[in-house]
Image (cartoon, rainbow, N blue to C red):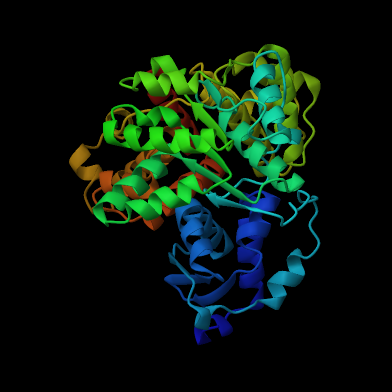
Length: 463
């Protein structure tokens, strides 16, 4: 631990990890942060020390925003965050371990260590027990269960397709969890098709194609997400075809997910279409109302909250696109309750929490940066050049902060990308602006009205 950190109160360390815990699921905290420590904390920098390069890479990929938000929440300072796996900087923080030895929510039952999954790490919550079954998905669910019970014999290959956010990845990971638990197979490879393609390209460029082939053809079960990404990849299709044949002919189980059925994947070779259709092809459809209600209640329960029936019905009747958006609505309601001092979750609160997104008819309303700049310019009377400049007059600064707030909430851009649109601001500056707007909206009724007006103008333009 650095001298800078040693000079700070122990409460910063505990508070920082408490803030992380608030923002991630209990099982994710246990997996990625339980053994982490603070190697350095200054006014401008924070270094999180972890035990391996694998953990470091995963946190950098998935949780940098969480770290930024957590640091800012403790003392209001927007620090530059770095994650280190340097063994010399890895320090076990007893104070942190003691704080989290007793979890308020039970963690998932650990999977027996009889085998391993190579490739993409599994999400501990994506199990069969947490999958809500209805008329829209009962066939793929039953087939996935059968594959997990009897790999290589039940349905081989198993091809699950459907629109985004309906549970295809959930089923593939559930198969992995179940097979690991049973211990019937020791070498499982679960990976995205994008990673498969990238590894194949690297194998060609680095002269390690034989190593690439060995690692895939020696696996006992292969599961690939988003196999439709093979479209327009002629050479990768050729390589994949031989890998597929090798595994199936050897009685090894293969499972795929796709946004489209085999015959609708563009430029997919006919012999691959034929192979995919030689097993079972199951479609996950949009969930019906009863299934959506059950999903809403299950997602809330996983987060330690019981939604009243009328609240679950309210959300399920209005969010019909996919399961991810249902989960997003659940998170919005719980978050709104938390930010309002734990206000009880009822129909009125749910309506208020979801009003901005339900007014657009979807929980995934997205705007372009041009839409945002247009609305902000009109509301605050500033130019785009002024928003992107370094000028800090009150009007320009407020307009710039509101633009970053809207971009964070209504686009899919990362913090770094948003900063780029704002004249080269870094991600910490964007996060600081977002928190500044949220705080001002809570404290200043007039500003809150202005923020609601510009938000309504933006969302109205998306209809």
